[in-house]
Image (cartoon, rainbow, N blue to C red; front, side, top):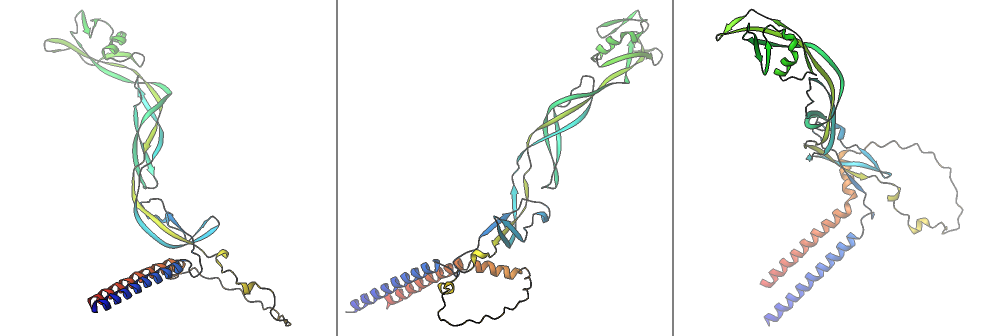
Length: 328
């Protein structure tokens, strides 16, 4: 007999639990079907470029126009961010002063100012072309000469045999070949003795000095190529904007308000309309008011979330009571 009573009570509790869950579901569906005004204001998110300084130039503005809609800033946040380097093209020209047959360097280092980093960075790029602008001969070419076996009938200058009494300036080509210098880029105009003969290691020697000119080429070299900019470790503004209320969000008139047919045939006395003074301009809402507006615009979502947690709590209470009833 006791078992039958207990099983009957258990069935009643289960029915109550099912009914409670059904009612909670219906209530939630009704709440989700519409809010207080049936609409939610549009929101957009602004993400500033990554910056490393104070970032004042990237701070979100109070109002933002987009697609004919005015959006008002409701929240601002700053977060750490990293911007990956990008491929870009660099080029620059350098004036080079080249001696003889020298060529411009095959590569050059270009220094670039990065406005985002507010710092300089350098990249190496190859030579693209070189154009000669001017060629001049500078009269500053000189080098020393030591003649061994001075006073002999002849002496050797590398592979060349020079007569002992020869004028050395007449052997400019042989002297340049001995120095491995091209004749089209250097010339020797004169050779003079710089001291008296002397003996060294049992050999008579005498020193001389050669004077001449060297060819200087002024070249404009252009360097360039594709490089990658450095990564940027910095900060970034995040701004949340919400559309301001417009005519499309006003409440639609009811049927009674749109009915133009008078209910009673009474004479209507029209009083003269008063000219009301213009309303004073409203000052921009403060931070607290903007937070309230943001919460009010999302009241439907907040209500549904609250009801959902209430339904879960009610179900938990029902299960708890059922468990206690089983123990009895």
